[in-house]
Image 1 (cartoon, rainbow, N blue to C red):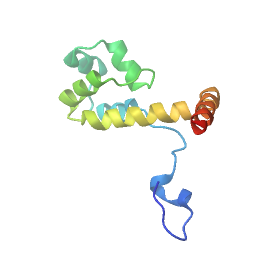
Image 2: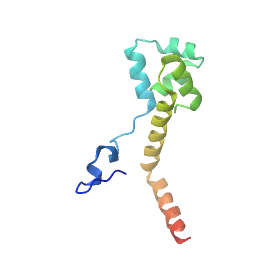
Image 3: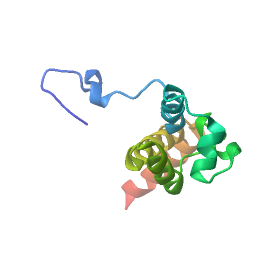
Length: 114
């Protein structure tokens, strides 16, 4: 967390939590639409099924390390950037789950006693 004396740390852009996480599929969907690439043709070129590609682009399936590398090869979109987006998406989804956050609270409570 970035801190600046005299400034509320939650008002610093790098400390803000987005209203909703960005799934890497959103970025990839915009990219292939901008390039006017057919999903079927891209899936064929990448050697994955159309269903898998469509699920990723519609944020219903995560980007794996392998699919990120395939996207990098096919579209020249850095695989590590896609993986960071996926990680941030996963972390924000977990933080939005009340039952998981309660579990996390209990673990932290136990760890503080050690």
